Image 1: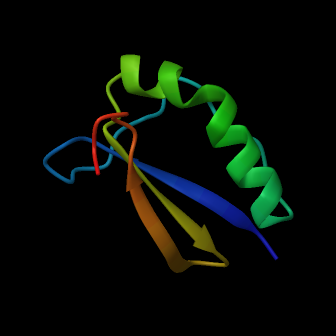
Image 2 (image 1 turned 180 degrees about the vertical axis):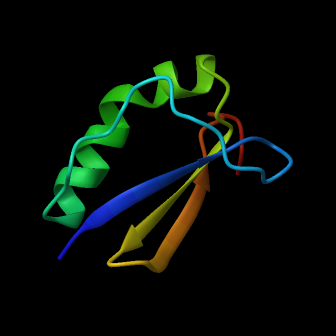
Length: 68
């Protein structure tokens, strides 16, 4: 299994992340990584991230702390 993140601007367009992700073999590893670097990603221009497992979308979330 491969877990990957897609990084998006507020308008939904894909953007290059400020911090390059590694290859994740578990969902927990992918989520731990995003928990460590989300502020850097936000400062680098990403507003949202989407988690994929082998190309299938699992969920998307905002990087803005005030987003509900």
